[in-house]
Image (cartoon, rainbow, N blue to C red):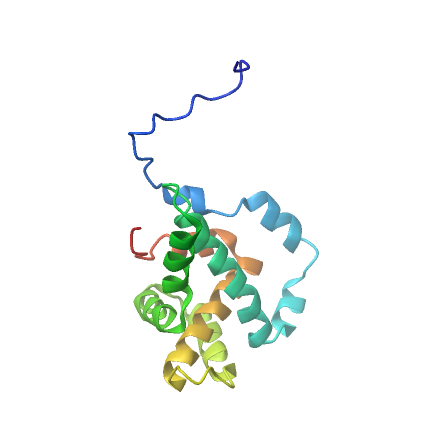
Length: 160
């Protein structure tokens, strides 16, 4: 028996549609996490550390994107891995570049130049592009969540 506030689930024959707003990490959480970090402190964070954060934020975004319609865990994994691999991230970075302002392009440059060491299966240029995307995402996560959301919504992730 359902309580008054409980929502009715969709019938099994209806496919839920994806709305990119579902992929937004709640801004209240982001604001609370970043309130204690000053801009001066953020400027001191290395591009590698920003990429480390950006990698996690981007993967969470992609995981949330593929959450609907419900699927088997193996399908979720396959879809997410296809989007978070360096080759795909490099393509995404290239597609976002025309939309970036001067400050964001500088962050991308710093991230690209900081990419040292790489997996053996990936070419250096691809790895640098992927790292620059992660650096940008990490930086925007800490400094301008609204802008990050705007850029993430420009991504053309492949439907499941």
